[in-house]
Image (cartoon, rainbow, N blue to C red; front, top):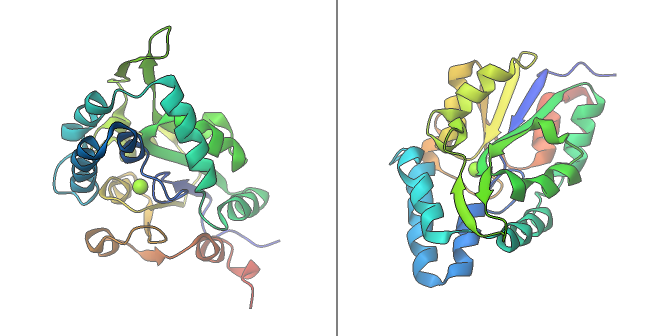
Length: 221
Ligand SMILES: [Mg+2]
């Protein structure tokens, strides 16, 4: 049995665990003009050019996702899981590493992927949606820190995970988890952002690299 290098691993969801940007994906169901506008807002936020707070509600107000949209997105996340993600999460969990998801995505859409990864639903931290009785969009959880730029370190600090903690993600909101004491690993398997990589202690191209980092004695020769 190997001794893990990190006691806890915090994974981002969109463009890390799965090759989907959920809110952009939903926007794609609303036509090219909405899709282009929303993708630009997302990219500005993930590159750190604007604060996430400024774009979160604006994106959802343009899309107004329904229950059917969320169900379809849930399927898309599962279909786009990163190669090796399920095996790596299982290996980390088997070695006693605490694995949690901290995402600025929409919680109901991320639940199927969370289950597919073998992660408990209580370890999925994301933004809830408010839908009406017919499944139409009403609002998102405006109290969620995860809809704001500095939300991830706040949530991470409140979780009091076993240390040392490794935070893995592709965006500027993931880099911010360093403020809560985490080591930051940039995940470049789907998107490579120079501004994010420049702030990373380590760069991971795939989930095999994550497994080798956290469980080095299990590295395959
Ligand atoms: Mg991401």
